[in-house]
Image (cartoon, rainbow, N blue to C red; front, top):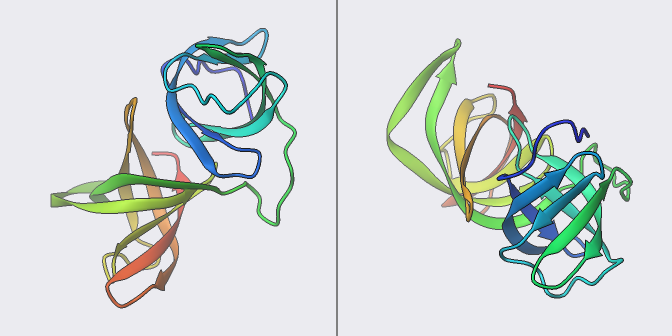
Amino acid sequence: MSLSGNFEGNTVLIYTPEGEELRQTVISAHDKTLQQIEVRNGVPQSLDIGDVCPILIMTQPTPIEFQARVAKSGTERVFVLFKGKTKEDRQHTRYKVNFPARLDSFISDGQTFPLHKPLEIRVIDISRSGIRFAAPTNSLMKGDKFSIVLNFDGGEKTFVGTVKNLRDRNGVLAEYGCKLMHK
């Protein structure tokens, strides 16, 4: 987890300490020296100075997860970023989300094949290295590589993913577990 990039303008997902999505907003400032980010719009009012919460910064090619401590409150919030986090049985923590996205192309042998009509999907959870979403059953097969566009309040971000597993939910919808990778 690196603070070397500039996170200003990136979408950030802010979670409760229990891992429930609290807010989705845009980073208005990033101080690399102090390891702080500032958010002004869509500030979660339930977080107070000293509270620690997980955040997911939607950078490309993959999101970056941090634990963050609230350092300033009011109409804006300053979060001090640090690496420490509660370890779960996965390499990267999954964060529950519920937002729209779309698959707009498939990738095969290094070539991109745009879809005539993008496939609208619903993202269920996301981590630094993967994403799980619901889409119509039989939309994808294990091993399929695709371009996915995530829709945030701060705009859209495009990632490349590969289907690692799938589970039919009810004959109509399936859940697809996918690895995010470099383009």
